[in-house]
Length: 392
Image (cartoon, rainbow, N blue to C red; front, side, top):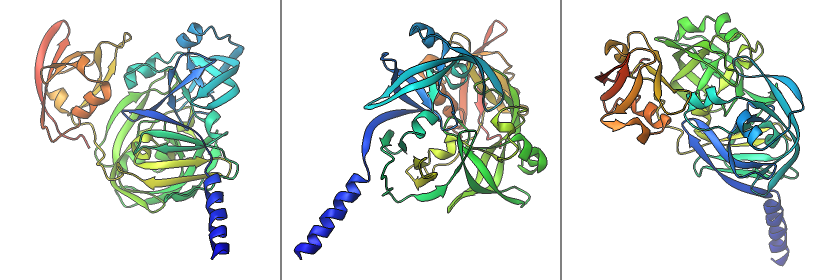
């Protein structure tokens, strides 16, 4: 009996040591984007997007100037929609809790266009520099990121294991999709927590298989990634999407028309974004090229789609909320709202009361059926009641 107890103690101790937690830090889920707090070269805490699609850490140009960081040389960086030019800053230190990553390169560029679209201040973007050094666990149930020592790490959760391969420093896994006409395909998709979509088809795959005509009703709007270059983007639905044993029916998807960047990659079918990924607690172990997906409390929540016909973003000052696009045949178009109109209030409450993700959710919530908007258009203030109706 003593011998059995001793063996259990030894193996139990080994199990605990196999999970060497280095640091645990809370994250904020702002819409479909994951923000963590960190410091750069002993700065005050700043807010970075955690993006598994980021191969080179990015810092906003205004913050770089404020911290007096010295640029080394100019460099181009590939984003989802294209290429953006900026400057590299070498030999930096990034700290997250008890984790210190030394001698890290930062790519500095203007992130204002992303801030206008996402709806808040963005100090930078980080991904690969953490993922290559640590086992990274994203626990969406608790809104916590855990970083583990990769040596001897043994996953002990209930998640499903997926082997991945890196393409342009981004993990890709195999998944299956069934289009509305019954055609089914199995291919590789980028895992990209920095993308707000559920799933996007890349341009090459979408063109090759004529995806636009096989995704039912759809609408289009301009999008931009890290590069401030907009390309047209379509939204539709697929009959079924599955990754491993996880299946999602009638899932809304994006269809890229990008001519450059990772969304023009010919070897990868598309992108799995955080509107899908947040439905799992995910552990990434780059040392073994394995990701573990465990369904969480968000897994069965419905995918909401645009029901107003408005595509919104902030103005340059991040104060005025402007109409970026009005979709054809939508409630907003029927009400006479046009591009560049300024939204003043929703249901009688000033828009400054809400975050942009909260506003977008209100315009997707068909349970409320009607939303009343006050807006200023061509110098005239008007009011319109929109009868919300999903565009897909």
